[in-house]
Amino acid sequence: MGAYLSRGVIECRGALSDDGGRVFDLMRKHRDVPMSLADACLVYLVEIVEDSIVFTLDAHFNIYRQLNRRVIPTIAP
View 1 (cartoon, helix red, strand yellow):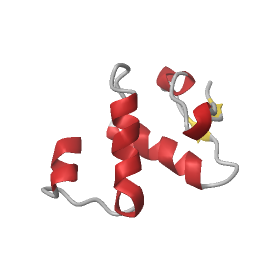
View 2 (view 1 turned 180 degrees about the vertical axis):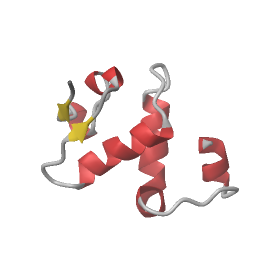
View 3 (view 1 turned 90 degrees about the vertical axis):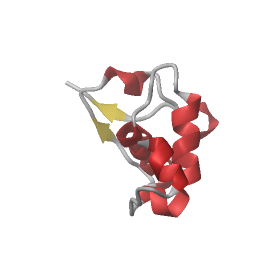
View 4 (view 1 turned 60 degrees about the horizontal axis):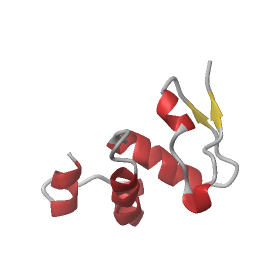
């Protein structure tokens, strides 16, 4: 799906329309995990929305990092 978005085949409004490049950079950086498009959008939103916390059941958020290698604040059961 990321390839379709980057080529303009699919258009997505929101985080991708503001700074899609950052979202795709995150997906490339974490490709060994791998990071989904949805996860990359959440990490991006954590970076731009102050005091964000991600509620997740996905253990990958313990691995993902935002800018400056900061941990993603999460609430997980």
